[in-house]
Image 1 (tube, rainbow, N blue to C red):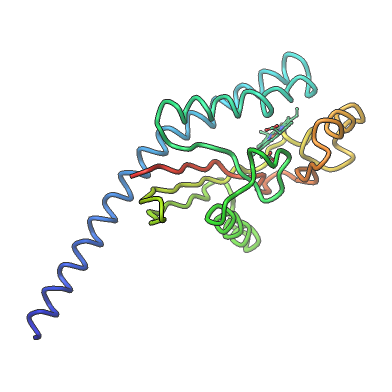
Image 2: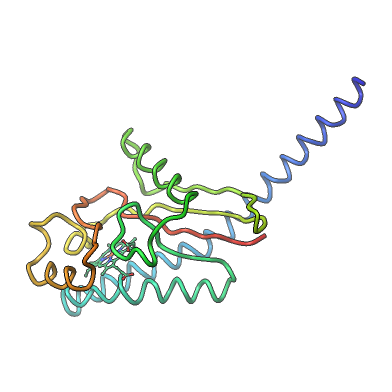
Length: 190
Ligand code: HEC
């Protein structure tokens, strides 16, 4: 009897160890895809602002970001998206239950004074549809974002008008630098 318990304990801990190993492997692979994606986005945003001001940078968040996310999804077979608790585009950015909880956890950590730059969550989940690796990384708001996601005083009248016509249900304003605009989310079938 005792032996059985010990044996099953060993089996349990070794399967946990395998999971932990898998998890760090999946996380490393996923980060290797997500980091260049975020870098590319940042660079495209800065270039658009340098070339034609904020009005033309709308294209980066509106077209380039979803397109890049789509490209990465096709190349990897993973679902890569940008999600937020306060979305501008509810069609693309609405979080599912897992993402919503992760975003709320990020908010709670931020409220305790942690910096959002390094917020990451990584987990293997079982769903009726199968087993998935899930990953999320917070996207903190930067100075270059306030012209479109900042306070009313920071957004020009032209931009306000544009946002109002294109996104009548926009929730994605009123942010200040360092707050969490959203997150990159990866859902990877295992
Ligand atoms: C020139 C305006 C503009 C700038 C600057 C801008 N965004 Fe956006 N952002 C938008 C628009 C428009 C959308 C909606 C895109 C769509 O239709 O899918 C959006 C959507 C997003 C989303 C997806 C979730 C949602 O709310 O729909 C995230 C995340 C985001 N922006 C983060 C940022 C960050 C971080 C920065 C700064 C590095 C930034 N944005 C700069 C206009 C902008």
